[in-house]
Length: 291
Image (tube, rainbow, N blue to C red; front, side, top):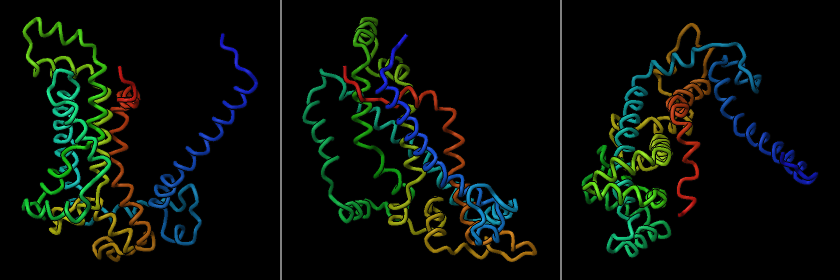
């Protein structure tokens, strides 16, 4: 039986209190947005909605779903997230695996140059000019190719691969396995927590990205959902189709429509997370321990 000193007990109580308060502070904005999105316009504008919804109505969501542009933007975001995460994970794995091998010639200088990009970058204008010179402006590839890999993720996965017992690889080589078979049959299966964690980080980052989409994309049919959402929030000016007049227009307003759009935008991330939570919990410390 573990014995805790009075000081440790006080520290644990203090820890629980602080963490509980932080959790509540983090959760409150989300609860408020959801409550405001299903409350009447009068209740939201008068400040009556603080935690729980008032005058329950789903009219704001109906107005959001009436907007044709949101479905196009939604489909674009799903495409960018699925295809982008697939490309990012493929490139990350292909970069991390050889760099985790001591026998790989040039491993040290290559690792140095990769890490160097974390400290120094060319800047926004050279980056934009590079994308322009490649002819990627206003194309879907502009949001896929330039962001095909994250240096930090490569380093994390490389460190995780280094912790895989070398005996597994040696036994596979004795049986005549190639590097490709060793990677696909040994390293990837035992690295599911790390791969799930990095996929989640890549996916959420791609789903929430909007800045470079605003810079590179001008075609309205190619913009992601977050760009549309930003326009709504910054300008507080939903489209006429969203704000179409009706007999029940008093049940929604610009604010409630924007809140409803925010909720619609975050539903997929919330829906996916429970399915990979077990891997995320196991892989949260990926790369933190080097064997």
